[in-house]
Image (cartoon, rainbow, N blue to C red; front, side, top):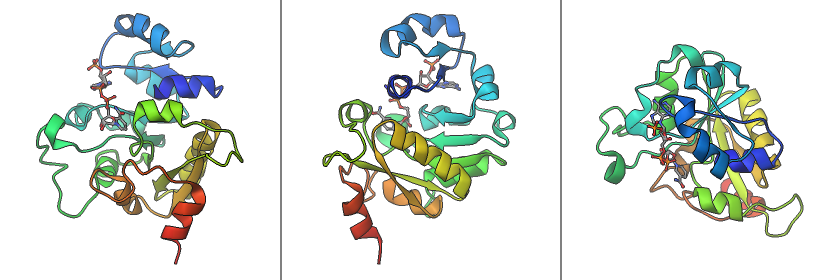
Length: 194
Ligand SMILES: NC(=O)c1ccc[n+]([C@@H]2O[C@H](COP(=O)([O-])OP(=O)(O)OC[C@H]3O[C@@H](n4cnc5c(N)ncnc54)[C@H](OP(=O)(O)O)[C@@H]3O)[C@@H](O)[C@H]2O)c1
């Protein structure tokens, strides 16, 4: 769904699963027409922004080298009921994106899009200025990476509220106050700003 929304916003999109792109060609054509099925390593190498949307239980299959210098959007959630207990993510203090960032040294990790369901992501899109336009939060330690991803969020139909650090994005996790929250920018800013 995310690929489809991005294609519809005018972005060139490559999409990869764990194996041969031929195996996903049909489903990509059906669900995200216009996106290109690719091998993961090719998709990563060619991308300005890499979006990780795989179960966290599979995340450590990914080698970190390919992500060095890349803007990496972490949409993943640690969800033990479906993912099982993942010892590296079962951390009492760190958020899951901070752990992702530690596993991908040199990557410019940005947390966003994890806190909205993918069907809602398509349905709730609105143009700028629409009174019903919702906001999504974007958390990163790298301000330029956050800005680049915030632009994408705005382009796909949401206002973007940038949080100052990746750690601040813990509020977007399952169990956090903004996971699944449907709020406009002014509502979020009123709640978050002192
Ligand atoms: N579903 C939602 O509405 C939603 C919303 C926000 C966030 N999220 C988060 O997004 C993540 C994915 O959720 P999902 O529902 O999309 O899961 P999913 O339907 O199980 O899809 C997982 C995808 O990840 C691919 N994958 C697994 N290992 C891979 C690897 N090593 N390299 C490349 N691709 C790999 C799988 O490909 P293969 O079939 O080849 O293994 C599959 O296409 C989760 O962390 C979830 O919490 C989901």
